[in-house]
Length: 352
Image 1: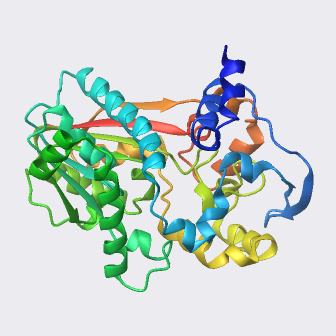
Image 2: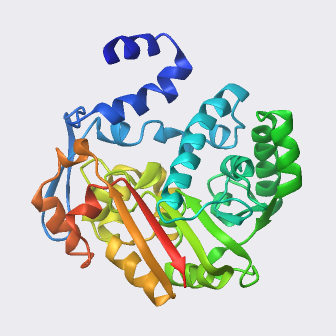
Image 3: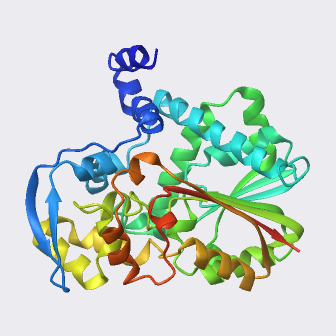
């Protein structure tokens, strides 16, 4: 049945682009890629790393678009957004189930989504009985990726993007959006949001990009009302694909097996045309937060850790070996093997 479904997907370009990778990813137990060796990198400890031709494409398909401003600035079509909506709806359902596990629901709650980007999940939360929903983001995160010269350009892009997303919703949903949703510019690490403002803080694929995590969690603790909940689903730096499109290297877990100097030298030797954007992203857009670090930071901020749930991928475990772990642990002492093989982590926190 699955084989027949995958064969049908190949007949549709959009399904092949958006749906086939998701299904394949869920079913795959072994990670296969083109293992043609294209070079060798010697790090500062004298270790030699063979580089594989097909690895980056398998880890982050479509990474090339990050270096094409026309594709980065493009507003997706309505059809593409509707496909993305299916995944966003799944995220919200999982989010609700997670909250229900701790006897918490969204009815009449005020919600802040940190790192809201296109606003799709912000809009979806209106369906869940929330009293109001605020989406926050920071323009500086997008400026270099969009090759924008000023904040106004980023704001115009995000306004158009969110307008396109809003248009795929039904009329009754758009009315709720108009009544309940607003967007603000706010850096959660240096937030201007008033204390005790929200019942819930949520984020998806954002926590890994916050550099000053301690300050961010302190602000979340300040912003949450008593007994408020924070939920974050994120893609950790240490996971197999944690380098994202810009910093994924050509050998397994390369982005966290090299120190910063070796990473920069790798770019100069093998990706000289990517240096400026990749270096900036590596330094300014990816934290080095292990699950143990996250637990410690949350507790210091006065937030109770209700749970940290790592989602392990069998396919990533199939290529994991101890020398990858030992090399990465040289640079990050709190690292565990679970950090390397969990591409997605949930954390649920509570303000006492």
